[in-house]
Image 1 (spheres, rainbow, N blue to C red):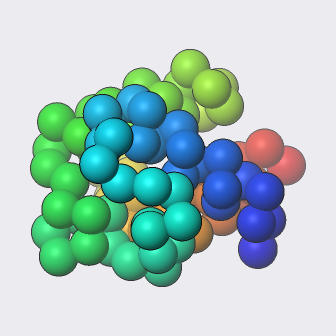
Image 2 (spheres, one colour):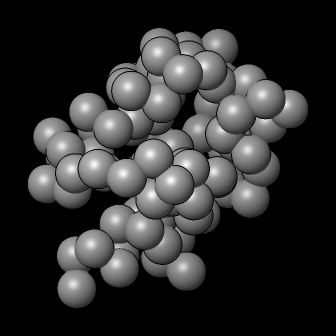
Image 3 (cartoon, helix red, strand yellow):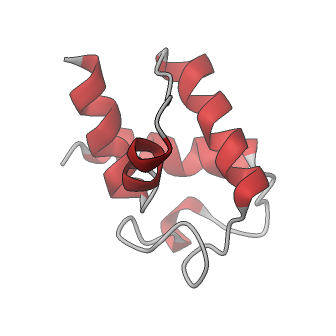
Amino acid sequence: MNTELVEKLKSELIEQLNLEEIAPDEIDPDAPLFQEGLGLDSIDALEIIVLLEKEYGIKITEQEEGKKAMQSINSLATYITEKKK
C-alpha cells in the first residue's frame, strides 16, 4: 500500500470535508468512511468525487464503482493507484 498517498488522502479529506476536529493520525485507513467509521454522508461522497476529479483527474461514473472505491482511505488509495496506471 502506498502510505504516502494514504497520508495525503487523510489530510485532503480533512480539508475538503471540514473535519478540523480530527487529526490525520486519528483516522484508521481501514475504517469505513461512511456510517460507523468516519460517519460521512452522501454530501461528503459528492465532495470526495470532486476531490478525486480535481486532484487526481479521476471521474467516478458508476455508482457501484464509487461504493467500492469509497469504502475506506485504503480503498481510495488503491482505486487512485489503479486508475493512474
